[in-house]
Amino acid sequence: MLTNMSDLSHGSGEDAAAVNSLRSAVMRLGRRLKHQRVDESLSPTEMSVLGTLARCGSATPGELARKEHVQPPSMTRIVALLEAKGLVRLEPHPDDRRQKVVSQTEEAEAMLEESRRKRNVWLASLVEGLDEDEWAKLRAAAPVLEKLAHL
Amino acid sequence: MLTNMSDLSHGSGEDAAAVNSLRSAVMRLGRRLKHQRVDESLSPTEMSVLGTLARCGSATPGELARKEHVQPPSMTRIVALLEAKGLVRLEPHPDDRRQKVVSQTEEAEAMLEESRRKRNVWLASLVEGLDEDEWAKLRAAAPVLEKLAHL
DNA sequence: TATTGTTATACTCTATAACTATA
DNA sequence: TATAGTTATAGAGTATAACAATA
Image 1: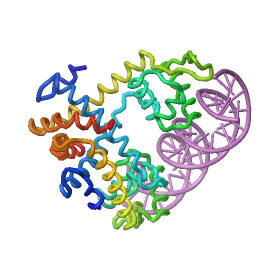
Image 2 (image 1 turned 180 degrees about the vertical axis):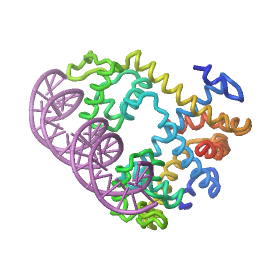
Image 3 (image 1 turned 120 degrees about the vertical axis):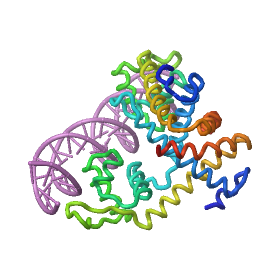
Image 4 (image 1 turned 90 degrees about the vertical axis):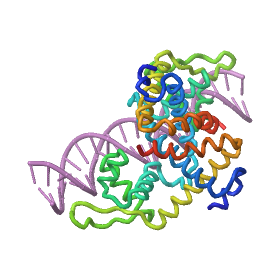
């Protein structure tokens, strides 16, 4: 197992342990954050689609299906549900009449902001349990984690 | 929004931004790690049950249902599927004949180890894209993240 | 002829309600 | 009478296959 980690450019044995610890902690913490949902009426994929639209701007159903790793018929259904809830808008594609353009509404933006706020509050309450030194280490690592997340 | 973060004991405005960055990065990275599955034939909950058994040792179906936030009938089904796949063993409870004891098999332990290995390799390949200083910050933060994850 | 999106249908996972066995 | 687990059934969510419209 360590042999598979030995191509790490920085160290070797200790680094493997650090990677293992990092993976475990990120997955566990991510799972707990996921449970802090603002709107129980939205499925995880629906939330994820809204997040993608917020990050990448508008997109066609096909693009969304590829980004969310979901089949096109599923995205058809998801987009229809989101439209019914007033969270996305559908417009005809300017160049290709087969395609459609999906974009988020102001309601969606407000809901996402509220969702982020709720998770932040929850995470901040956890951080209360840390001492100043631990929190400093976390602050220093945050930009690196962000870089990893979209590497 | 910042008013809700102002009860952070360490700082205030910058801390809110750091919490936001941390939340976003942990969730995104966690989602990507989750996709690195070793066995596509196991559902997320089945994997999670095996993880719980590995962490906590054997447990009754009722305990597992509570830990996984799933209803008892669902756990009945999950345990039956895992048993059919040879990943858990069911034994009678020593004190109470209504209950059963579920424990993982050697195959499950091997599979979990393989799963951890695969995710570690993937994460290690990401870490390759960091410089020594960034990796040092991550290593320093790993124990703190672990503490957060089970706080 | 290939591609985008949709409709029709089936499968997987989970939940609720009703039941059996044991405490 | 209460509790642990199971069976029966229904509801989400997603997938595959077949289809319509456009490129």
